[in-house]
Length: 102
Image 1 (cartoon, rainbow, N blue to C red):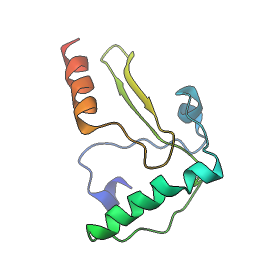
Image 2 (spheres, helix red, strand yellow):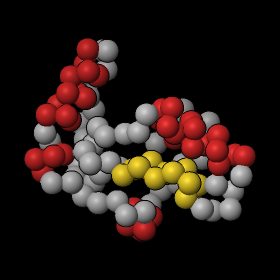
Image 3 (cartoon, rainbow, N blue to C red):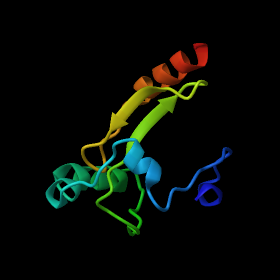
């Protein structure tokens, strides 16, 4: 994935989903995963010229975003309610800046 996306940083894989469970993430209900918010996210992508990729893996798995400080403490946690649910970039950047000063 890191090579495909050209990411300049390491990406960790968790095929057994141990971290997923430890961070309190969960599977979404079918109606929420494939509801109007998800359809809207796909339509916004199409409007920007981004073709959706065929999903692989567990499409019911909901994501989350976490910032962990240098001591290993979670200083920001966001658990998505739908696949398109994400925190704002500003919220993430504020959390990263705060963690960097600790």
